[in-house]
Length: 366
Image (cartoon, rainbow, N blue to C red; front, top):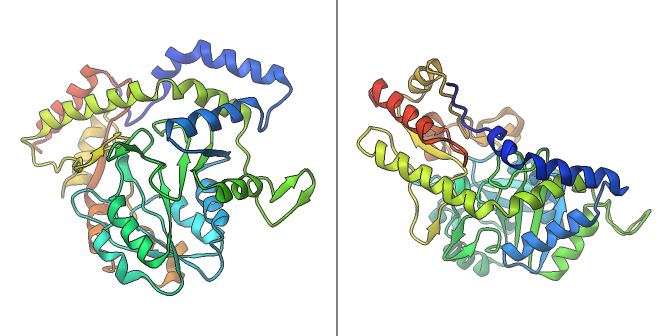
């Protein structure tokens, strides 16, 4: 019995008939890009997030970039974020002409360390992008105190936090803008690429809609430089189906996490922490151990496949060496990158599979 860290196949078996029906409707409609399915998703997902506006785009990366551009953040500006994130968070900042500035993370939840943000603020700082990692939100009350003091824009990176809440407010409704990914592995994943920008600020929403289509307000005439980032109808149709399932899937993720928490509490693994005021959506169930590579190797031999998100802090990657960071600059992020790994986690994971993972871990002697 092979156990993957993530799989969409069981989900597809359940939704196959509905998905193929909706995809057929798209292909028969004559409208493949930015049609009624995208409009429906923009309305429905905005409502889910308690936001006034939603903009469907090509990817989570583009969602961050266009959010930055819509807030007029670009060349010469600095954007604060964490180094233990996916490359797209940082590539989006660079692509809009701004400079990423990193801040170390908390050791217990891997979220940006609020206490270290102010020290990194300069006259060039225009924005903070907190990464809501693994399924829970950063501390937005404290982040907004800093943002208000220094007149900074806050853009939520919600790629991993769809379906989570902070003080009963949905992730995505906490910043001036929010950026979501519909990459297949996500809590609300397409069967291809897709992204979404959320906001309740009218001027940002209007600019984002223009920027996703070359900066055009009308066809063939660019008001300003933009990019090509349009969510297609097929992916929007699939996400509209899956949006109805999201809350139940998050409940199932939390049940799986609860089972892991209970059965692994007496092991030497450091288990995930759900912070006060947070409703964790468990995009990933991330544990930590000094013998990470040894444990993962043993599990793989038993056909149990885990993942590391992320093994390389971005400040140490060659592609961003021009930023002049060095090893030791962010010790908590660097340490966690050597020790973290994700156990299998997705809503259709069966109880017998969870028990096999736990049994294997205990047999290894963690």
